[in-house]
Image (cartoon, rainbow, N blue to C red; front, side, top):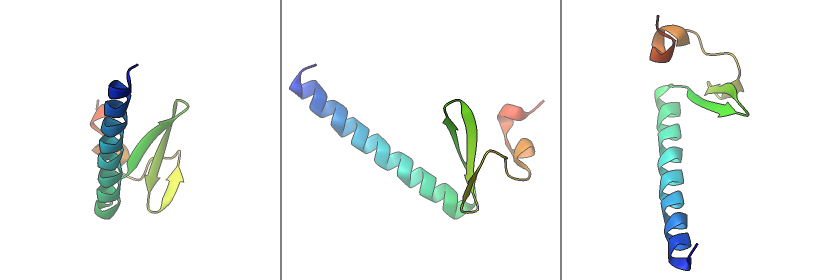
Length: 67
């Protein structure tokens, strides 16, 4: 990989990381859970805690779980 390509990669990564952090913070302010997959395990961040248990009402809210 060339130095120019490496510099572009770092810039794009910095922009993407900043956007994700802003989205996560906005979700916290709005009370929307942040959902992560850590080693294939779904983890929810909400109400100031991290849990493998989805928040109340999550199944009704989550379109991926809809029947």
